[in-house]
Image (tube, rainbow, N blue to C red; front, side, top):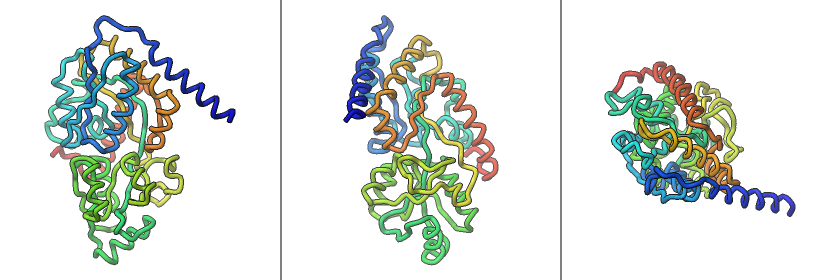
Length: 325
């Protein structure tokens, strides 16, 4: 009971702090948060959770604007063309910022030139899950099933091309001598729909994309990336435990603004974001989605982005995927 009271007090204090930021003269009338994936996926759920709290922290309406397609490229281009007045931000992760510009010829944007970090809030990992009709209950059984029943060939869904999930599929094929075909979707939601209908045997996406269906017993997560097991999936081994190393660095989630956005807004938004992710219920919900909540200032997010981009330049080169498409 005492612990519950402390949690309630902490929640009340954190919630009251959302009204502590004073109004400012140059505030936009509405904050639009671009999301590069369709409704129903992990990124969309995260955006809507944060938008609901940010509206109180910033004292203005916050709307989520889904611009799905091309692994976040469409949303990134929308951000690039948006006015740099603080009215538009892009909630995204490593794929669009760190990986896509290295593997897509003429993506139409340069994160270092066209965007500015506005604050980060979490890291996460990707994982492999199988459909209900796939009999494997462990990664080893999955590999054996492909070899015995599929003749060594099988399709694996991915939320976007030229992404961490695609590179993992390639690496798994090389490592285990399998002919794995990565099938790209327009986000995780349609991919999971096909998995639930047994239209595709397996998929690779973020933990937050799979976690609810895994808990409900509709899909089975067999292995996760990253250097340690995830709090949301304590019984699921890492690929490193299974002997597949090289993916220990964890991707990130953050917000980006168009280049030229006033620093006053960037700093104000970063402060509001830090307040929001400090609310116990928000942290608990993000953690339950499979995220590791890690508030990052704009400077810290920029440093994280650059380090991750460097790591992936090496991985992409090793897999022979560094020729832009």
